[in-house]
Length: 409
Image (cartoon, rainbow, N blue to C red; front, top):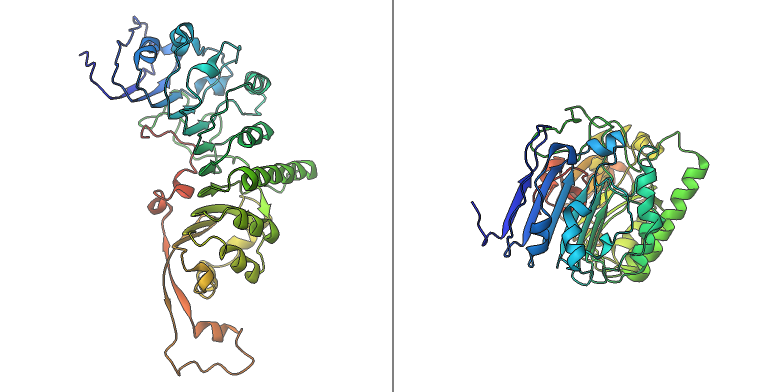
């Protein structure tokens, strides 16, 4: 039934190749949110180009293509199918939030960058699209790098992506005032286990097996050249964040970038509004960490990222969980951490409670033994509880660190 007053529409495309007539979706002039997923040109999806042209109030757009095209290197997607009418009419959709998943197509310089008003754009999510270095897809993905004359979204507040390259740094350098930046670190799936498949049932190439490789993980096989490139890229990201985005509140970096105590201090000094932070580092001197976190009094959630297979991971997982809890409990009671409510190390997540001080007059620590284990057990200590990862998905530095498709905005 045609409902011109509809404001939100979620459309799942067919996933079976059964020939049928394509239907043009009629105008929905009041539409503000449109989500379409499992797009596959060979499965006869409905024509949405008229909808795109006539939805003059469309603010939220999420498009998810079947991972089949990227998995097989099949060039069957043309953006003109969806935005051709807008380009012909020179209509810019007033989008505030946009999300693309699994986009695999050639940039033919047809003006795709002009389909939305860059001054309106506030949030952008790009997952498994355009930035891959996979030999199967890199030729088409590079056409987006070579034609990078995209208008600058000067009012962008949130960027979420699994792309980490020099071109992305260049984009960040052309804007100011970003508030949330999430570089997705959770493992992607292999060719036949795409985690950006449909959220309801697997698409044609998806099977229910675990992911087999990681995006941005430091492994023992990484060459010195790769490590040097990673350090250089990390420096570029830190520099542009500290110079252009001192307004940042949520920041999730790559576990491959192990920051020095000095780098962490400079980051906290430059970005005093941080509320959530996910970074990797060597174990810094505790005094240095306290001094850095004292510069970000609003920080209440922090992740210490650990790259799978790295030396740090081996050391961390060789220590019993109880020892991690004891070390945190005897350190995080200090004033520098008073705002911190959640803390993660690798895959472990801890919820922090109140500080427990020893009863007056009952601290019988001999002089000179203040730093011993017995002295630490005497207190003060922070109450700590181990929690499941899924229970903290509402905290963005965990929940946004996910390449899987979600129909919700």
